[in-house]
Length: 421
Image (cartoon, rainbow, N blue to C red):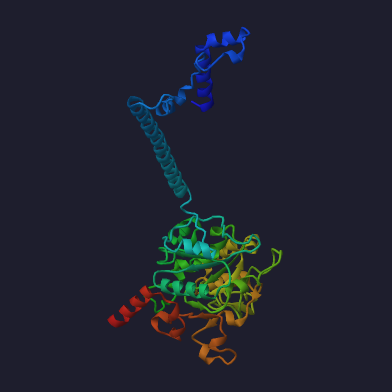
């Protein structure tokens, strides 16, 4: 019971026990006539143990023993209560912690340096589409989102490209990877299973079903290589993202993507350019002059196009202009008439036309032609792009520029493949 209740009840008991003394005082007798022997003043019950220890007539062995027993018993009772409360609190916290972890296991905040350090020992995991990103930075400072998608044969390039971006970025960058499995040793990269995106967003509808020569990559027909078509649904699996950068796996970035991303595709105009890429003079590549029925294909009216391997995209404008569905319908029409022979490049270029913002030419430099160019040197380039079948992990076209961004496990794998060749 509360201490005040105990004191009140014990004091009342003391008063009722001394009724005669109280009547004597109320009858008018002088207080001075009373001495200590006339009134026995009882202490409250909780003073009992103290009285046993310090009786007025001096301690006696029995009283000392009894007091010791009482004090020890009280101490054990208090300690037991504290232990019970402590274990109960610990168990409640553990259950609460487990529940919180379970409910939030798919929310990963990976943009700030502190978050990256906290996640350094965590596993990369599958991410649900539609997460609202909380990157822990200034509310006025938008993070930069970079999207990669690759198959098992090019994932080694994806990992090296991501490391090159991080080596030169001046601010927050969120990486998104779409593939067969999470990137090893990269817990800060958000992973999306391509099998899930395939069914949810009907990626098969973008595929060019017409034949195309196979590249040097083993048995991979690029027209049917699903990771190539993920770029068309970024607005769907990143619904809260305003601006992103799509970049192929066979790249190395030597400049600051944060600074560039914040200086392109700005403004409130929904009808403005949805993408920013380096300009390429001439019509889009891979187009046929006649369809499969031998009918001439009208001119598309495009004199300046772009390469779709590296570009920034304003996803708000993309959504406002309905570009995903426009590309989807054009791709389905191509199945019937056969307008182009390539994969993801033609439908994007034909849908965008010339309505794109121009990036500096240094932001997508083809490594297969860099040594022949007179307008640019290797040192000037911001993005090295090993487009085509010759890749740096196969030792082609300045692999020394790519190799520093490869982790040790991948280097061992490359060395093992070279020794077995």
